[in-house]
Length: 182
Image 1 (cartoon, rainbow, N blue to C red):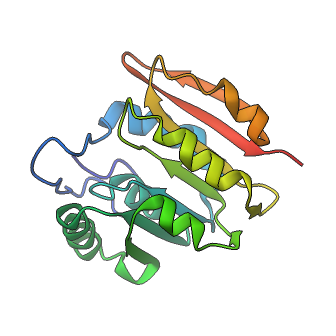
Image 2: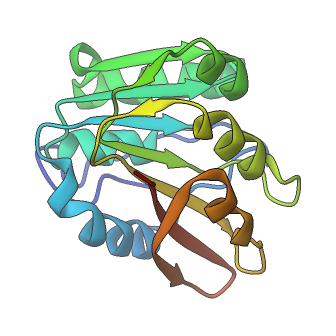
C-alpha cells in the first residue's frame, strides 16, 4: 500500500496486522480521489474508521489542509500515527482514538469539507453514522463518501436529509457520495 499522488507520492504505508482492516486498493483509491479532487484543496478531511489512515493521508498529500482520523482500535491508531510521521503530515493531522459514534456525538457542528467513512461491512454501521450526522449542522458544501459492500442499501439516506450525488460501483464494493439537504 502506498500514497498514489501528491506531495507524498509513492511513499509506502503500513497497515495494521490482522483482518480487522480492509485497505482500499490502489486502483479504487485512485478512482475515488479523481472524483474528490475538486473538493480537497484547503479542506478539512474527516476520515472515519480510518484503519491505517491511508485515505486521510492521501487527502493530505493531494491538498487537504487538515485531516482528522477517528479510529477506536489501538493497533490501527498506532499505524495511523506511524504513517503520519513517515509522511511528515503529523502537524496537519488530528488523531482521535474513540468510537466514531461517540466522536460524532461530541460535535455540535461538522466543519469538514469531506467526510469519508469505511465502516465494517454487513453491520449497518453506516446507517448509524448517517443518523448521527443527520442532526448536525454542516458547512454548506460538505461531501460525505460512504464505502460499503456493493449490495448495501442506502436508500434511507434521503429520509435522513441527505441527497445522493453519485454512486460508483466496483467489483465487490461501492462509493456513495452524499450531501446534507438544505
